[in-house]
Image (tube, rainbow, N blue to C red):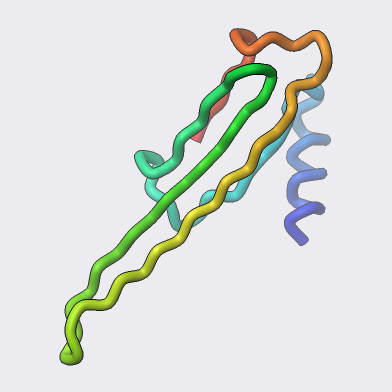
Length: 83
């Protein structure tokens, strides 16, 4: 299902310069980090929640990381991204 959504997004851009789309639903934009270095784009997101319950404190933690190689001929400074 997600792949169909990505394919529709790619088809709708018409310029075909979109390298990747990543679902970071549930993460605050401030929790998402994108770095471009040495021909690679690295996207990571980290979210931590603390809840106090009758039994004490409970923690929920989620993280995702994805690394994508840039196509040949694309330099690090040409990459743009948005969250």
